[in-house]
Image 1 (cartoon, helix red, strand yellow):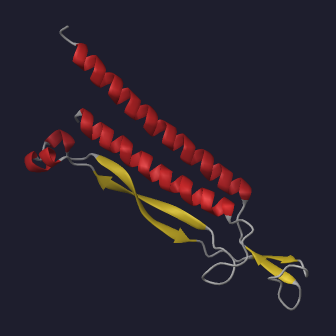
Image 2 (image 1 turned 135 degrees about the horizontal axis):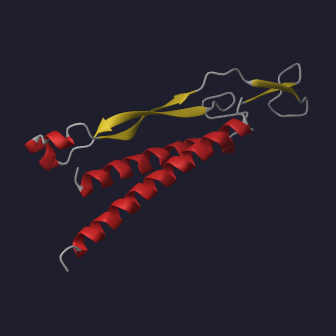
Length: 145
């Protein structure tokens, strides 16, 4: 594996974790949203990841054996959670139904914060990986001086 492949793998992890953090922040921002453009309360979203091969154009041409199994990560898609809504009695709310109940998204703050911590740790690990590769590259440049 060369330096650029290591950087490509680290950057794919950064992009994936950034998308994950965006979805988590969107969930937290809409925790009390009772009316959306699609109608009804906001639905919680989650991100799914999948591995993706990391090949440089040179690796594709050469099909180098040492780089054959290199994989990064990418976002497979954003899925909408189908949990039932929370039903809260609030007859003064403008979106209350005839019985006085309002439907809120079923978003657990503790769960979202846990997911955020996990995504942040993943992001930090990828930053550290890229930093280590940069240090290795700089050390390699000083060989023979």
